Amino acid sequence: MTQTLYTHKDSNIRKTWFIFTLFLLLVIGLGYFLSWYFNSPDILYVAVIFAFFQSFISYWFSHKIVLSMTGAKEIKKEEHRDLWNIVENLSITAGLPMPKIYIINDSVPNAFATGRNQKHAVVAVTSGLLDILDKTELEGVIAHELSHIGNRDMLVSTIVVVLVGFLTILSDFFIRANLFGGGNREERNGDGRIQMIVMILGFVLMLLSPLIATLIQLSISRKREFLADTSGALLTRYPEGLASALLKISASSGKMKKASHATAHLFISNPFGAENKSSWFSNLWSTHPPVEERVKRLRDVN
Image (cartoon, rainbow, N blue to C red; front, side, top):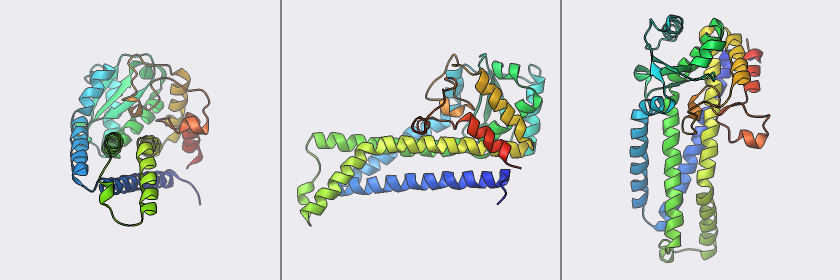
């Protein structure tokens, strides 16, 4: 079967939701175990409410927090007319509201998009990015960022953060409760050996669940980057523009002045700088796919 930008986009969407479904099954399974172990669902209700409240606040104000952390400044059309025209034209093509445009005074080339929804979206680029990219390359980067907005990646990432937070809360509660005597295990009936096996498996899963959840979160982040690449290429109809931009960004990248692990996943390239050739294991902990793989996918499709 011939691979096109459309088939790559569909494949990335399917893979994202497959991983997301596994994530939900993990949450449901651990939640069921915890209810069984403590003989009370009340703690789950409290954990769910807390996790969703915390994530709702983060989601609603995330763009303001991120812009403040990166030192981004909003621009007017007269200040950067070429950049403004590119964002405006591509927004019209994508059928999206015009996002606010911000510039980060940093020589390291990079860009990100944020905002709680399409009507409150922001696209930010560094001054270094504007210095090294030509028009077609800049269009590729902006199309990538607009694709994050169009694909509602902020919503997807927020849901994932809710689930990660939920699992972490459950795991922490389970471990603390066991240190102080555990649940009502003596009240359960049935085969003691089966209960012991279930309890051991559940205990191991509870200990590992934050690690598993983080790995799944990073995997979804990488899939969304691939999806934004293909969606952006569909938007410009010129995959080579983004491919060339990614190579330039990778070759020129260093650590940004205000790099933060909390916002690293938002950027088109790792704000801590290009990594050395990484192994399969180290790639598991990366928020971004290898640049070489991203460029290869863009250049291999029609």
